[in-house]
Image 1 (spheres, one colour):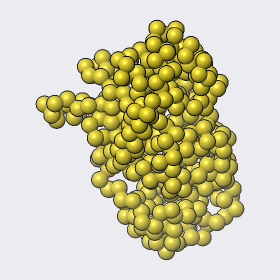
Image 2 (cartoon, chains in turn green, blue):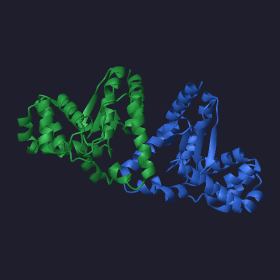
Image 3 (cartoon, rainbow over the protein chains, first blue to last red):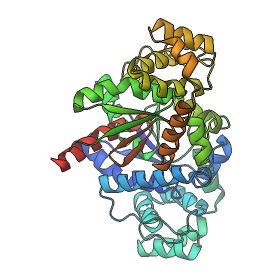
Image 4 (cartoon, helix red, strand yellow):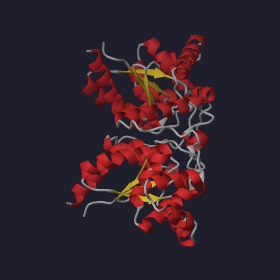
Length: 206
Length: 206
């Protein structure tokens, strides 16, 4: 039995976007896929007492500068030429995250995630505005009217709450977070460790 | 010209100790040595607005638990069987850090650093107590009386302030911090990046 790799994500996290773009290469090397799990970062912060890096770094300019340098290094290392920081950051992602739950129900999860991440961190649009969000769905050929009508359905809301609570219950406190089996890894810079841990568990199970 | 690798350290940081113990293997692979630069972490925090992980993690138990897990992984990966968390943590390291400056003057820098790190994070002694500190120096065959008499000399104090200010001027905000040439890396988990960056710069200079 090969281990499962889970990726808990929120569209509002640039580091989650950067990790998302590196996943295909890892999936190709490992011959497996990441399971994408929507988890609302605002809910995670509230439940764990954690805060956004935008808040914690605000008073420590030297650390903020270093984190920007690390992002630049990651972008260069993985040749992520499409990345643009979103000038509207931080953006309320509640409708986008509920949309991810709905997209799974509608059978369009993968193209939805692709379109929303590209809108957020490549086109750098203000996706917090509903008309902008809907324009991105239109352009991707997604059923915008379904999203507009059902993103607030109670089962959709409940499913996002449940997946966020599941994340918190597993120890998630920020974004991006990965699990290889039960082993948790936090941060885009842990992807090498994720890959090594997968291979270790796969060998152990063989 | 091979690049210079600098390691800014404070004895009070368990992560700096863990990095220190991994350095010999890296030095062996690269055929170079790390330059150890004392920099008072309390001074760095004050100058940069940063805080100790002990403070920032106190309100976020899930993150604290993850950091402990990452430390365990690092210890296992590098087989650091001697490591013990110091129950007296956090310990005021001012006399130990001034001692590092003095040790360089006295020509005993390397055995001094070795003895103090071992006392702090292997024997897990309360090195904040002067008699305990002096006992460790005695046991290592270091000139304890010289340390007792001269650790507070004005040139020693001034040199530690200067090296701490130099660190802050270069962008240091926490411990451990490394430089490969002018490229800064923060955290024990960056040692792989330090090694790769050294090789990259060495190739570029060849």
